Amino acid sequence: MYDDLKRWVRTVPDFPKEGILFRDITPILLEPEALGTVCDIFYERYMQREVDKIAAIESRGFIFASILSYRLGKGLIPLRKRGKLPWKRITETYALEYGEAAIEMHTDAVSPGERVVIIDDLLATGGTARAAVNLIMRQEGIVEECAFVIELSDLEGRNTIEEIPVFCLMSF
Amino acid sequence: MYDDLKRWVRTVPDFPKEGILFRDITPILLEPEALGTVCDIFYERYMQREVDKIAAIESRGFIFASILSYRLGKGLIPLRKRGKLPWKRITETYALEYGEAAIEMHTDAVSPGERVVIIDDLLATGGTARAAVNLIMRQEGIVEECAFVIELSDLEGRNTIEEIPVFCLMSF
Image 1 (cartoon, each protein chain N blue to C red):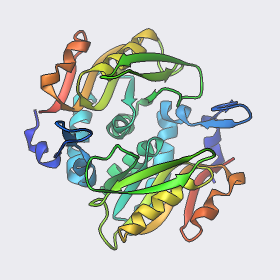
Image 2: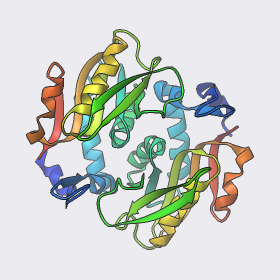
Image 3: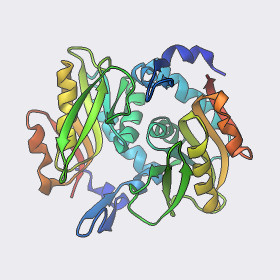
């Protein structure tokens, strides 16, 4: 855990609705020292591991995953909301509080046996993370780890991806 | 212009609807050499200019802007779709073919007089770019330049931001 980083997380009450404490990471982005620290931690964790691709969950995951992909010199896989990817793709749906959502991946994004680190800013209930893991596995990729900047530990999202290692920088 | 990069752009016909030729940048992301080249061009362009912040238009703009922000050591401003930013924010709406869309920015993202480079993957009609420029200017920031990976030049989007310098890597 890197609790020093918590000073860069702004807690906003009642967003997106009453009773929710929203953990806002935009202060991390505005402060180069903070963003650099987060990205250095990810880079140092994966630089000596066997990793072929970095998968980025839309859209805040794009920020941290892009920098990691660039620094490692490994390809970046965008996992996008439904209807955004133009080419041959696979889809995973997951439940929301009301209704469902979906994320998609191009079928040429992962080759069988490739090792992929999945990045997002937040692990909450784990619905999106589970869908992301499924997308990689359906193309016979191997999920090396799922990494998040923040974990909302009470929601027990890591249980939804219990067979996959999980790495989080901060827990609330 | 960097027409060598066009080999990394996939043209997908009839997406998102019939008659549209969609320029797909995901092959750039998957190939570290290509992503590195794009980001090096941006970095070399702005490293010796007076730039205080990098603004990223959601969501593919996040990818290129994040890497540029990290490399320059300058703060990253996410310009997000309506309803995503949790704190005090300003909103700019713009017209779509049917209806309208909006992007938002936190009011603490820019200080008066700061010089900002706005990054997105694509300059099409320029509606989003104009809204992004307006957000920065409303907070008394100065838009140093708007930079795009791809320009669809027939759509003349740069006319919508005619007072702002525009930089594009490829034109279709």
